[in-house]
Length: 284
Image (cartoon, rainbow, N blue to C red; front, side, top):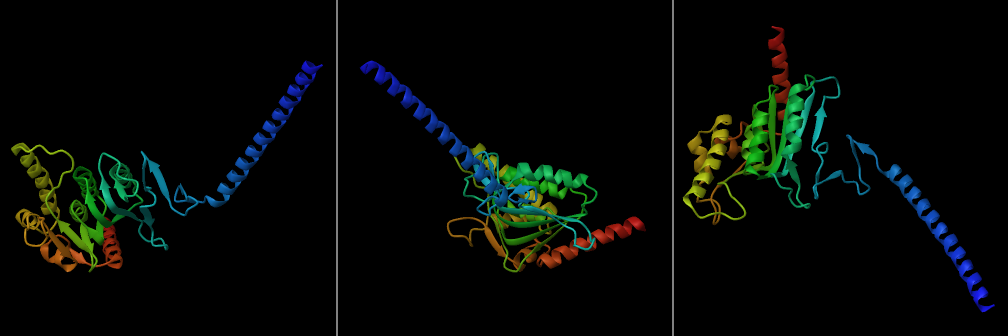
């Protein structure tokens, strides 16, 4: 009798466990369905992206949380059938071949270069406005973007807001015409390298080669000579325990780096004029 009672008790326990397990699974499924319904209500598509519940439009890329491409770009059409202009923002640090920290705002060259190629192939886009507020970054990535912008067939204008330092200088001068706000700054300084550096003459020559690429591009696309840019880069009298020059607003125009002091009104006005001049020349 004892063994039979124990066997019946074990069967009853197994039945209770099975019922409880099924109930728990059902509760979990219900919770998942409820959470999915909440996400559908809170996640609203914005410019091809989904707005996260915290209100931030970000994408995960290789462990680096960076602003998405759609977040940094927009299309301006005047709202009244005026000319269609593409807006490109270059902000934070220009990222190179390795992902930067997730806490760093970055501009990714691997996202911008294909987009610039699409713009060149899109006849509906008539101009490009580049907004700059960057601390600099990778030389190769920055020059790649600058060369791409410089080779576009459409009218291009850059506007320095806040600052456009280091490799941001070639980016600022890569357009047909450049503007800087009165409080905008630009820092020109020698190339720096992180990581292990071999103490040999070849290393110095390599640094010289990299700097020559930057100096040549800037002097070719701005109203400043090669030697003048180099003098600003190697200035020893301004920065403490460092080389370089910081220019503010109108000083960049006097130096020949930037074409004009102005804001968004002047930048868009210049673009519209150039587009209309292009149309007029085509008609005539």
